Length: 134
Image (cartoon, one colour):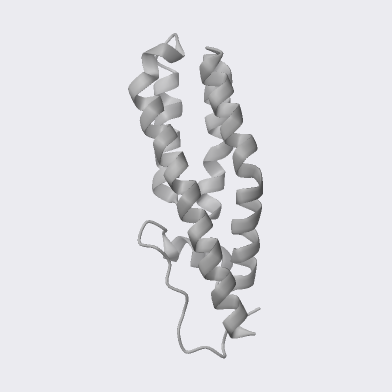
């Protein structure tokens, strides 16, 4: 649904690549709200897999878990987090144990946690925006 009735476009948080989202969804803010909601529905499961893989010392599973969550960040315009996941995957290929990734893992884990909060905030803003456009 296009929001041609409104003179103002939705303003995303600066960490979100609004141009990228626009290239994916145009100005369909209702669909964006659905996407943000779907991402949040899957988030805990995806992050639990990352945590479990790391704590169990399974480097291949850790790399695969990060690979699996990576596209989620693109769906919500967090392309910098997507790139951080890609870099982490590449580093995984150069080490023999998750213990060798402690600094990188903590940085990624913190970014993933912060991203969830940001996605939740943007979803609420989209809900409000969409309800005002109805």
